[in-house]
Length: 310
Image 1 (tube, rainbow, N blue to C red):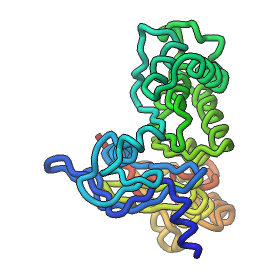
Image 2 (image 1 turned 45 degrees about the horizontal axis):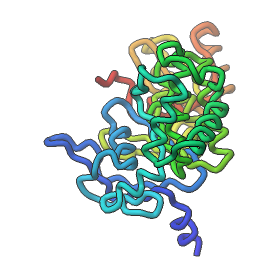
Image 3 (image 1 turned 180 degrees about the vertical axis):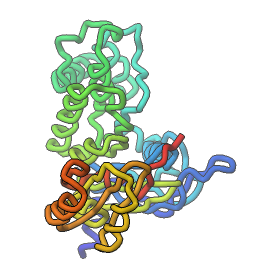
């Protein structure tokens, strides 16, 4: 009975979902489900497959193999019906610079047969929602980066979608603009919208997502809530040691402490962080280390590595 409830509440279901481009296997037989009224996040380094995955969910590209169901319909068979019920906010800003803020929404509404008074009312509602009503007659070039992203989100909501897909919605924004976008997403969640999100910002994922998957090389390597993943992968505390001294590494090994080593740092993961921190500080000096709570970025770097991806 419980399994039946889970199945009925799944907005997106994927089994063995695969996408290959010539000799590149971008997404490699992944399984996941997105449930109603949650924010579900895809994280991963460049080339991990997360954007390819959400493009399949949005029916922008077809899977090579596997099964994908969105809003109760099979993506390979009914993509047009799915597209009518979803909203997509892409990474790239593709607003029309020749139209005003309001007209960008009204023209887009026509694609969903929303015209006349209905279109005007819907556009006004959305401009109030994203805080751009006072800018409705402005040209696109007059908007800040944050305003453009909020307008992109408003445009993706024109058809009152059951599922909203946000592909790196705050890339390049300053902290104030990012938080404004976050507030919009949180309000949508409260109103019952299901959200699928990709992001490179770990704090964004931790703040917005109920559950996340971390992808690498086309596969899902871990899934769960942000708190669960932090607890499972890195425990509660991290000690950052600003030294590559061999003596420190020998000490960490003798104490049986879990750690990662870079050229200049040690990252020590411990459930007994304050005690381990005091012992390290007493032995090697108080100025070479700091103690902090573990976060999602620690999980991400531990599981996918610290090397730069192109």
